[in-house]
Amino acid sequence: LMSSMGKGDEVLTSGGLVGKITKIAEDNDYISIELNANNEVVIKKDFITAVLPKGTLKSL
View 1 (spheres, rainbow, N blue to C red):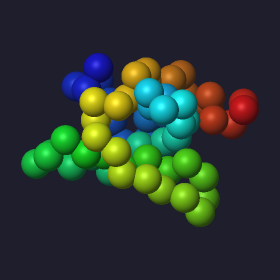
View 2: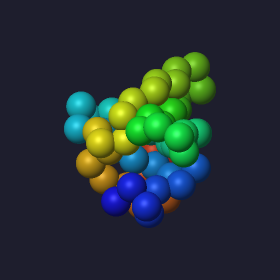
View 3: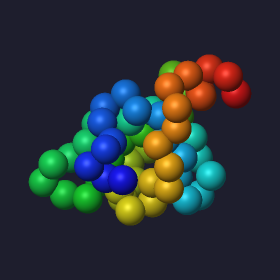
Protein backbone atom coordinates (compact mmCIF):
# COMPACT_ATOMS: atom_id res chain seq x y z
CA LEU A 1 0.00 0.00 0.00
CA MET A 2 2.77 2.45 0.90
CA SER A 3 4.51 2.18 -2.47
CA SER A 4 1.28 2.92 -4.33
CA MET A 5 0.62 6.19 -2.46
CA GLY A 6 1.54 9.53 -3.95
CA LYS A 7 1.00 13.25 -3.51
CA GLY A 8 -2.60 14.12 -4.35
CA ASP A 9 -4.00 10.67 -3.52
CA GLU A 10 -7.14 10.57 -1.40
CA VAL A 11 -6.78 8.28 1.62
CA LEU A 12 -8.64 6.88 4.61
CA THR A 13 -6.90 6.58 7.99
CA SER A 14 -7.49 3.97 10.67
CA GLY A 15 -9.00 6.77 12.79
CA GLY A 16 -11.64 7.46 10.15
CA LEU A 17 -10.15 10.64 8.70
CA VAL A 18 -10.40 11.16 4.95
CA GLY A 19 -8.02 13.53 3.20
CA LYS A 20 -5.60 14.24 0.38
CA ILE A 21 -1.85 13.57 0.66
CA THR A 22 0.13 16.81 0.42
CA LYS A 23 3.59 15.60 1.43
CA ILE A 24 5.36 12.27 1.86
CA ALA A 25 8.57 12.32 3.88
CA GLU A 26 11.07 9.96 2.27
CA ASP A 27 13.44 9.94 5.23
CA ASN A 28 10.89 8.87 7.87
CA ASP A 29 7.48 7.25 8.28
CA TYR A 30 5.25 10.35 8.22
CA ILE A 31 2.93 11.93 5.67
CA SER A 32 0.90 15.15 5.62
CA ILE A 33 -2.80 14.95 4.80
CA GLU A 34 -5.05 17.90 3.97
CA LEU A 35 -8.45 17.39 5.58
CA ASN A 36 -9.93 20.61 4.17
CA ALA A 37 -8.73 24.06 3.09
CA ASN A 38 -7.86 25.03 6.68
CA ASN A 39 -6.63 21.80 8.28
CA GLU A 40 -3.65 19.59 7.62
CA VAL A 41 -2.38 16.76 9.84
CA VAL A 42 0.84 14.77 9.97
CA ILE A 43 0.44 11.06 10.64
CA LYS A 44 2.49 7.87 10.46
CA LYS A 45 2.19 6.08 7.13
CA ASP A 46 1.15 2.91 8.99
CA PHE A 47 -2.21 4.51 9.84
CA ILE A 48 -3.33 4.72 6.19
CA THR A 49 -5.84 1.93 5.66
CA ALA A 50 -6.96 2.62 2.07
CA VAL A 51 -6.19 4.70 -0.99
CA LEU A 52 -9.57 5.94 -2.22
CA PRO A 53 -10.71 6.49 -5.81
CA LYS A 54 -10.08 9.98 -7.19
CA GLY A 55 -13.03 12.29 -6.54
CA THR A 56 -14.13 10.62 -3.31
CA LEU A 57 -13.62 13.79 -1.26
CA LYS A 58 -15.78 15.88 -3.59
CA SER A 59 -18.58 13.34 -3.42
CA LEU A 60 -18.79 13.47 0.41
